[in-house]
Image 1 (spheres, rainbow, N blue to C red):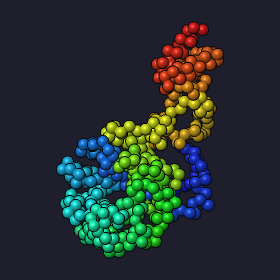
Image 2 (tube, one colour; image 1 turned 135 degrees about the horizontal axis):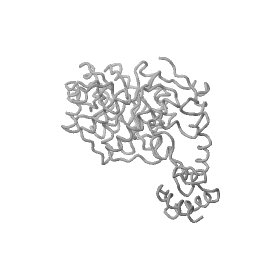
Image 3 (tube, rainbow, N blue to C red; image 1 turned 135 degrees about the vertical axis):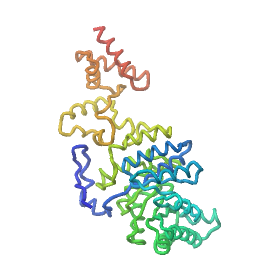
Image 4 (cartoon, helix red, strand yellow; image 1 turned 30 degrees about the vertical axis):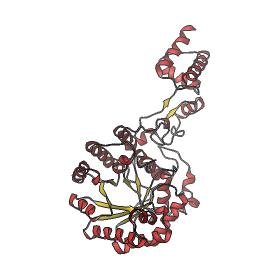
Length: 412
């Protein structure tokens, strides 16, 4: 695959070239491409309060497929509706592969085979202490059962991925035995390492991926992590740096507890900061995130990276003045993470009127209203806006600003 030209300056964004220094990148074991395995259709409903109807899941799947995810994951055995949905999804015209999550039971693999799934992701606890508590199983019995079910899937000709979870609390010798057994005894196609509670530091994850590449060289490695410590996106990046080629992500970071790594954050980070192709149409990120937010009834936080409203909303007078000064240069995107339209947002930025408002913002708003004012009147309007915002303890809507401005202009 042709390597992407690595530069911090393009016609859509300006980021640090330090990411591309040889001294930095010589530590990496990057794959030619990182594949996005999106788990929204499973993990979103594991987020408390969320319920998605079958038609809503179809709509999300269509959007994910259009956006360019490599594969999606569903859990058909949650309900009869989900079983029928799974059968419908695999028959749809699509590019994305459909993987069924299966627990370590042969009969669940049978359902995937009958439905025509593209593959199975076989899961169980990878922490031997949990399996002893849950099932009274020893380490050997845990490995034997997982290998048996994985081998059954492979014997029946379906693409097989194994995802033992809570791996980061397992002893390292156990992990080595388990993954070697899955590859060499069961013959699985891919293996997943899961930081289920998200407490692995980025350096830890890169190290673990490196160990797995030593244990099962040539077998593609996938990364799954949760966001309990706010490290899920970092976990995906560090996994790819370590040599993982598939990352598990979810739109708007939806998932169990604090959620998973956000698809929109991971895709943008991989493409822009690591220079690794994902196959994702970046201009579909924001529309898909809004769709999923609407259907799950989980609002996108204002300060959410990439898709939050505050990403391209500005109130500070100094910042607004800087943006206006730069907009006619060859780098109008310098104050932003990228041009808004690159990720599917509308062009430009929003001026928010509030306590931090300055003269440039007021002048621009007056221009939009086709109102003229002297420098003294602009200064007076600025102070009036600051007072009103302080009373309201929030920003001012445009109609309130217009009322304030017209009153001051009329009085003069």
